[in-house]
Length: 381
Ligand SMILES: Cc1cc2nc3c(=O)[nH]c(=O)nc-3n(C[C@H](O)[C@H](O)[C@H](O)COP(=O)(O)OP(=O)(O)OC[C@H]3O[C@@H](n4cnc5c(N)ncnc54)[C@H](O)[C@@H]3O)c2cc1C
Image (cartoon, rainbow, N blue to C red; front, top):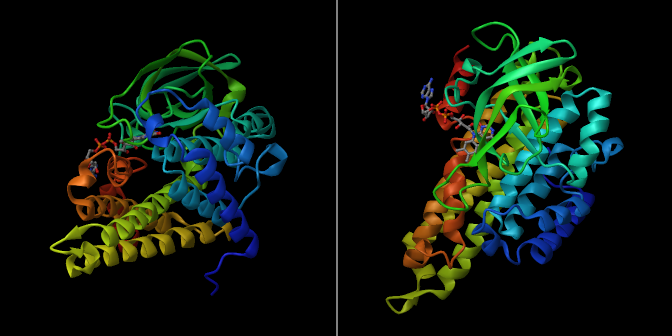
């Protein structure tokens, strides 16, 4: 068993670090305070090759495997200190571009992927509805075939990137009332007649994990060629690109590492009772627990990436890695704030910035409860 990255992967990780530190980290905090989409930064991500990193090369991407993509995601998040951007990248690349790369036909891949890689399109993934979150198969959105189009009606909520995206991978029922049968997947452009972009939703803090919004389909006419995969099989098909979706959470490894770096530096510096707080065993225990959580989350996530790259069945590992990594990220954020004491509650410090994104991560992409139910159900089968 080899736990090391290749020399090529290590060199790439160093270049991602340098890029993130030099080009992205400056101004990250200021960007977080605005609702503006950072088009100039997005351009830089495209030019560096991050937007299309795992997309096959023939469609304008970098053709990276899941392990390399995960490494880039972790390192980028650790050094860019822009956690909104981390989630925006995940929504665009891992859950919009990659489902198209995995499930799309040749024409769809040629039409959408080069633009998504170049950043001239912004992608999003729209599954959740006001009445169908954890139970996504209870969705009410419908798609009715009419000549050479489908007419979509319905509402989607909590969609990351929705306020800015123009290309949505979305889902609607083409048949059946219950369950996952009859759910179809579509690529919908915001310019299609009947597409409605709702207002951005107000998250607790501007940095609560990207810009999230609602969209609606008001008899939205979608060309039949934008059906993604086979009609009625959209939900099952989505599971084939699940690995990429789950690996989007690797950004939280970077967020955890970033907080741990900050806590170590702060604990050595900050004095209490005439000593640096790093001398207190209760503070040391926090640092140790943060390091253990990070290492365990890394092992679970990179194992998932390796299983995905080697064509193994990943559903159980994906649920375990998602559950542990996101809950560890939340513990990490809370402990980091605690190490910083009062400073940790101030926006001048970085450590508090990952708290809301981490909290949202144990909800988005399937809540912790749903992951536990799935894991237990698999064990008890
Ligand atoms: C910041 C953010 C970004 C998001 N981005 C996207 C996105 O880009 N695209 C997208 O499609 N969706 C997105 N979501 C939506 C997210 O996937 C859903 O919020 C999530 O799946 C939960 O659905 P819900 O909010 O309707 O909660 P509900 O399903 O109503 O659940 C409410 C509570 O009940 C629990 N619960 C539900 N069923 C059970 C059960 N059987 N047993 C025990 N407990 C249960 C849940 O775990 C939760 O604690 C995002 C959400 C957030 C917060």
